[in-house]
Image (cartoon, one colour):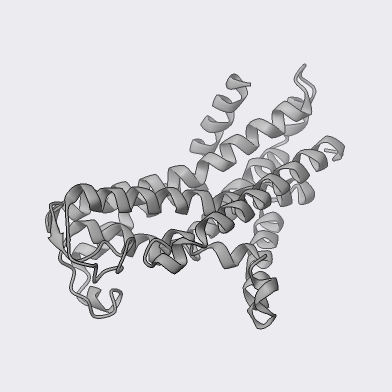
Length: 264
């Protein structure tokens, strides 16, 4: 299994879509160093520390660009192999279909971790120019958001960034699993990516329905990384994590089931 996972990971890093996604995550934080009206993103709060840059990067990319990258790249894990004709020969090897699709799932779920880590890491590197020491204010990812609740030490700021980064990684995993599921169903990268994005957008449109239904939607929980800002939102984190886990496991199991029975 480890050999298959390593092979799939090399395939992932070799794809153009994954490289582009990583490049965008690494270069986007540089924009904040030269942006003339950055305070508008902070709702007219002055940028006083480099610890605030991860919140800006996540806020800009996590709602659209990161799901887009995940939808395309994870769908490509199946679609690209079908188009190149390499999936069928792989299935003829003495390796079970379950191991093949599970290895792809593991790598697909690792991709959000890689993207968020690259984005946050690059943001902190860019933030060196603004200082990464203690400061008066907030990181945008903890209590009080950018205003904060008083002096914040470097260790405290790092803890807020790491906690929110972990939540961002976890909340994007269902998107990766969903994209791989559609990849199995359609055996086409474009169709699977479009189906993933369409599903997310349709879920976002269901905000017009009662709150009870909204709480069950995947898109309702795609702001999970911001919920450390107030005690009320913090109390909703465990419920969101349970629902995100259900979505991730559910999409993953459906992908395995469909792959076992799909005629490639």
